Image (tube, rainbow, N blue to C red; front, side, top):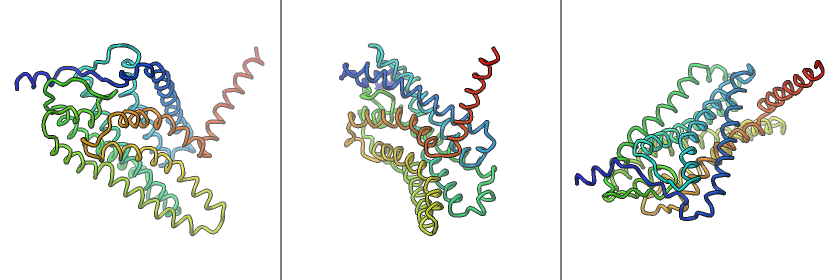
Length: 319
């Protein structure tokens, strides 16, 4: 027993895609590219939201929170993944694994709740347009964002320590490319039914409850849109919400599959590629989705690029 307890604090070996060595170099290039796109795209959204006074609205406040969240989420997992993909060393320290698990769980939970908050914002904008500024006042926006962040980190504070403290009987090989809860639970050499039940109960509040709020909000939004008589009005209302709906679909589709199934039915190969999808693809396409489908962001981005280009042209002309 003492030996098992001691081994629990040793480092881990992240197997990742080492069983497919021909994929590792390709994945390294793909992951690095998406990571850089994530940083560039989300930093652009944050800067535009901060610098343009026209974007000082609840929608862009929450969007800036989402962009910051995506940057933190990818930075918490991608550098270690790149390190393991590039060389033969696949190890991660116990402390490193604990930190990674905590932040992956925490930031994933924050995003679930934040997407529900953004859906409520869209409900207020479409269904209560005359009272929108009164309903979504700055204090409420700050409180809703705080609830999202505290919910995610509180959930992780419960689940991460219990997952890490499971007896593993000397097993150190994690059949994944990051320290994720389903993979670590699957390594345990004891019955994990009670922990899985706790994880499912918390997932109801962190994953399913926000999803229900999103669906209810969009049910009211759909009813309001269909009552709009003009085609232009319906199109404007649809464009206001379509970006958020796409992001919700991409994120929740993978999260529900990953965390709301028993560990004994969990396929590691499917889990790896789904985790790869919501770890690198979703955070990198979020800025693209919001930029391409949002008139205000496109105008500000084009204006900034146009001013920079004209400034360079003036400088050359002066020289």
